Image 1: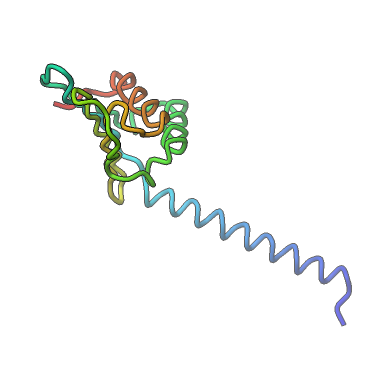
Image 2: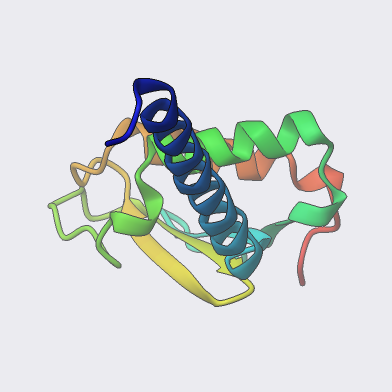
Length: 139
């Protein structure tokens, strides 16, 4: 027959092993899916002209800016969005293309002005545009 003290020790040991396993899995998954860079391209509009790509290299970001980028990607549910929003915008709408490149692949999202996409995607696009000075604009 086990005493209560022995049961408690076994339970505590089990909880610690599970917790360590979860921490290990999280660290492993983060290492496999390391963000490399994000890009924003804008085209179209009433007078279509050349528009540069805005690229932010994640490794050049400060810890604070990296946390903001991670939050924006999470708020936009970026990796679960469709590749293209097909809502009807207006004929002269800008088209936006956001690319997030990670070590194990990439995800591209294409959307237009007023096509019904979430506002959080616009916030992500604006952040990329304004933080491009952190790295160099892609040509």
